Length: 475
Image (cartoon, rainbow, N blue to C red):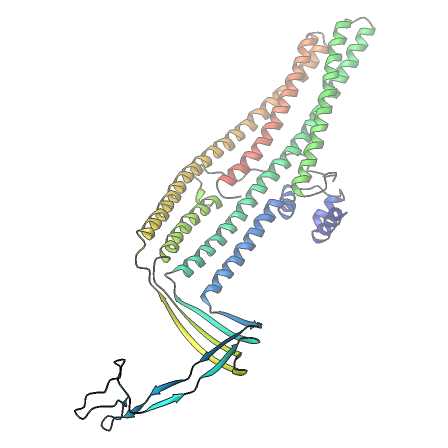
C-alpha cells in the first residue's frame, strides 16, 4: 500500500509520469532516466554519504573553536579523618636590631658561643608552650562546580590537516554520487533499449507467424486438391510450430524486459509501460576517439585520493611536533569541615593554564611513520597513472564499438531490405512453380534472421553510445 502511495505522490509532483502511469502517453528514455534517478537505492545511498561527509566537515571545523565544558561533583561519605597534635615547647625568635629579620633566641656564653644541651642541640633563652589538640576532618556533603574553556594554539597542523581531509572526503562523496548517477543511467538505458528490442522481436515473431500461416493454408489447400504432397504439408507444419514457439518466447522476453524496466525506474512491476513506436531515427551526437577522460568522476576521485594521502602525511607529522594550548577554569567549592567547622562556605576561584608539549626522542617512530605515509602517497599516484591509462584505453575501445555499431546498423538495414526483396521474389517464383518449397522456406528464414540481426544492431548502437558517453565523462 505504501508503494502505491509513493507512486501516486510522484504522479502529483511530476505531471508527465502521472500520465504515463495511466497509459495515456508513451514513456521516453529521458523520463525513464528521471524516474530511475529519483527512485534508485544506490543513488540514495550515495546522497546519504554526501550528507554524511558534509556533517563531518562541520564537525572538524569545530576543532578550531574553543571547547567549553561544565562539571560538577558531589561527595557523600560518613567517614571522618581524626587525629591529634601533642603538646610541646616551641623555640622563640627575636628581631635582629640591624636587619630586622627574625633570628633564633639562642642562649650564648659571654664569648658569644651558643650553649648546647645534653642532646647537643642549642638551648634557647625562652620557650613557648603549645598545648595539644584533637582534630577531625569531614568530606561529607562537599560539592564543586566549574566551567572550563580550552583553546589549542598550535597542534603541529593536526587540526588543519584533519579539516582538509574532511573537505576532501566531502568532494569524494560528491564525485561518488556523480559516479552512481552515471551507472544508474547506463543501467536504465540498458533496460529501456532491451524492452524496445524485445517488443520489436514480438512484432517480428508475429509477422513471421502470419507469413508461415498463410503459406501453410496455401500448401494445405494444394494438398487437398492433389497438387502437393503430404510431406510438404508436414514441412510447413513444423515451421508453424516453430513460429508459435518463437512468438511465445518473444512475448515472455518482452514481459520480463518490461518488468525489469519497471524495477530499474522504481515503478511497480505490473505497471503497463508504453514506449515509442520504434527505435528513434535521430542522428546520434558526434563521438571523438580522443575524448578527454579526465572529466570522469573516477579520475577526479583518484586525484582526491592523492591529495588525501598528502594530508595524511601532514597529519602523521603533527604527532611529533610541539603542541601549545591554553585553558581557563572558573570553579566553586562548598564543604570540607574541620572540627565541624566548614572551611569552604562557597568559594569561587579563577585559574588559567598554558600547556606546552614538545616530543624529544621516540627512537625514530615519527620518521618511519612519515616515510610509510609518503610511500602510500606514491602508491596512490602510481594507481592514478595506471587507471588513467586504462580509462584512455576504455575511451578508445568504446569509440570503436560505437563506430562498428554504426556500420553494423547500415549493413543489417541493407541486408534486411535485400532479404525482403528476396522473399517477395521467392514468393512469386514459388507461386509460379519455379521454386521449391524448401527454397521458399529458406528465404523466409533468411528474412527473419536479417530482421533479428537489424534489431540487435540497433540495440547495440544505443547501448554502445551510452557506454561511450560514460567512458568519455559526458554522461
